[in-house]
Length: 161
Image (cartoon, rainbow, N blue to C red):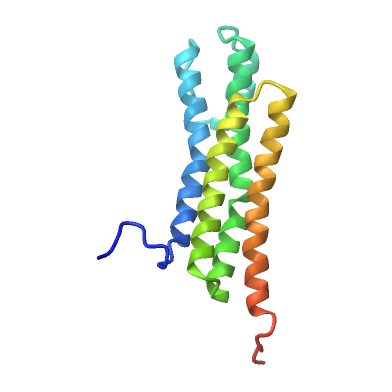
């Protein structure tokens, strides 16, 4: 009898599009918050002008502006490191890292991105900023662990010339 999630099967590649969606969600939240809170609407024709629009928008409180900017920062951070995660997943698969490890580490990375987004968007204190950094470093550790496991599997492999 098969189960929905069989840990002997490899689900790690599915984590890459899941992580990509998690990169995009903070932006969707930021634009939704802007549209709900401002007398203006988010300009999809020029999305990178949001920072300047926030600075000049007098209908928004500073707390709302800060929250929108933190959501945008969470999005940017996600897109800045998803490539490294995707490469680590590919390296682990090519090297033949055990499926259990691939699934566990890929799942841990996705979970770290969920937590990172929540902490970053809601961060209003120095203490939470440190938590955000810790969560980020936890995700980076997962990526490095995937690369290390792949490297350990491949280190004695002959490369044909």
